[in-house]
Amino acid sequence: MGKRYFCDYCQRSFVDDIVSRKKHLSGVLHIRQKKEYYALNRDLRTLIAEEREKELCRRYRFQGDCPFGLQCAYTHYSEEELASFERIVREEDEKRSRLPSIKEWLTKKANNQRKANLLDNIPPNVFATSQDLTLPPSLRFPTLEQMQSFTPSEWG
Ligand SMILES: [Zn+2]
Ligand SMILES: [Zn+2]
Image 1 (cartoon, rainbow, N blue to C red):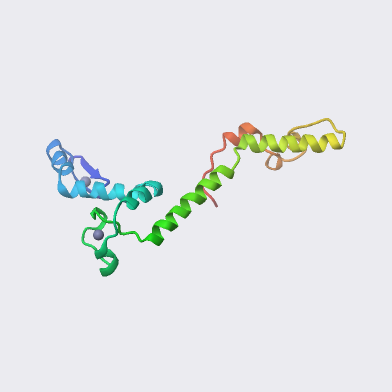
Image 2 (image 1 turned 90 degrees about the vertical axis):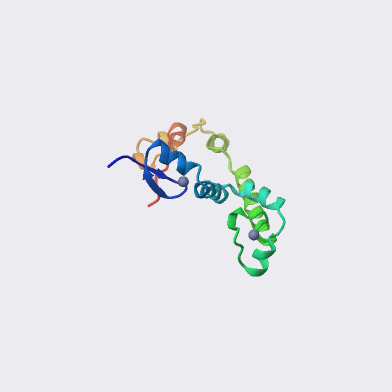
């Protein structure tokens, strides 16, 4: 059996030769699938910007269905839906701007610890817990290097 080419957009495979591939990639169905794929996968920001440009699709609003689907020149999103998307984007922005980097967070922690240590008149020891070798490794505070090289796998 010859090699087969699997088209991710169309979710189907065919014999992989130049003629079939060319025919498939220039086919109406493939082009439409590809366009729909991008339409479904564009990020929320792009979606909002693009849909805001369009007028409401009356057919979709009043008949609940529109034969043009994602190819429709009018938007199938209601004002409420777009507004809720905008809210999500705003919340994401706020969360991102609030979240300090690991480095900032560690610096802050170190400063707080230094302040606490100064109050107690103990020499400042930035990462006291990480150096507490009497603790088992899993209970020691991770170092900056460990934190930065940490790649989370899956939960559970
Ligand atoms: Zn295809
Ligand atoms: Zn429509």
